[in-house]
Image (cartoon, rainbow, N blue to C red; front, side):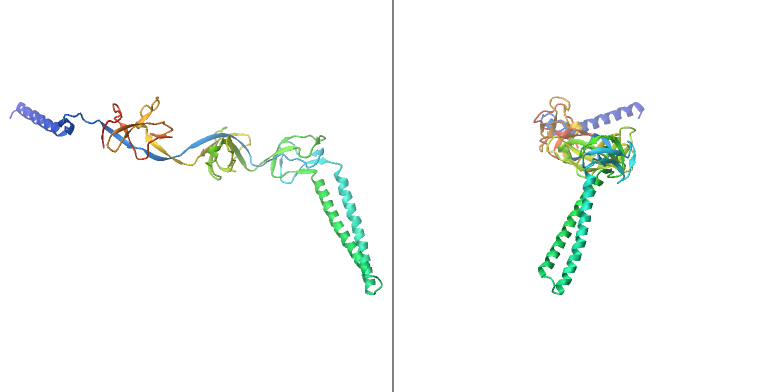
Length: 358
């Protein structure tokens, strides 16, 4: 057989196969004279854990802070520390002059000496009366009277000791001491100035631990718990460190304070601005594929739901946050496992039947 004849035979065979395949692939709708169903691809609505992270601005500060003050009025006689000096716990900071306290202590000590002398005399009188009573040379009533007087004097001495100790404590309070290891950050009163009880004389910041106070809506603060990890970024230099939630303030409404304890290894000065990152409790949310949302940025965003009998229903949605290729639906009538169209939405209308592609 020549080459032209062979080519004609092959062409006839290919045409026959094409006709057979076309007949076999025709859908039943064509046999009944009905148009074919539109084909679509679908995906399932899912319930996902919503990992939400927020960042809050704050300022680094010392965990221990104080503004020491005297318990009494007086004139600041001495200040032992300059601004910026580091002090140890118990170290003297300043001294107050109050002329009313020293005489009180002196009077208390004099009263104790007087009562000591009286007790010594009464002790001898009681011993003498006891000896005379044993010889029946004095009445029992006299011995009882001396013993009662001795006991009353001993009780008076105990009261005088308490008063003397109180006066001594008040005199000791005229010397202001550091409550913890710290650095003097500011001086508020100069020597020679009159200060009232409770008036801060200087300010101290601890040199050990650091913390950050941030504020957030009360609803967010209620979703936190103490001990949860936090990430911190130093705004000057971009350094990163870890922290943990040390305390959570409560507020019925408005902003609630949250204290973040910073890693003690961080070498940063108080006052440095930081950004605190917190991850909140995961809450299940509905998500649909981004491709399923029709007109996501328009006036009527919606998805096309495929019902159990492969019929289209139009469901209005409000798209939320985009995570990967999935869109969160804050509020929707959809449920997890519902089928939504992700391809082939072009000419579909409410109530149309479709053929779901595998």
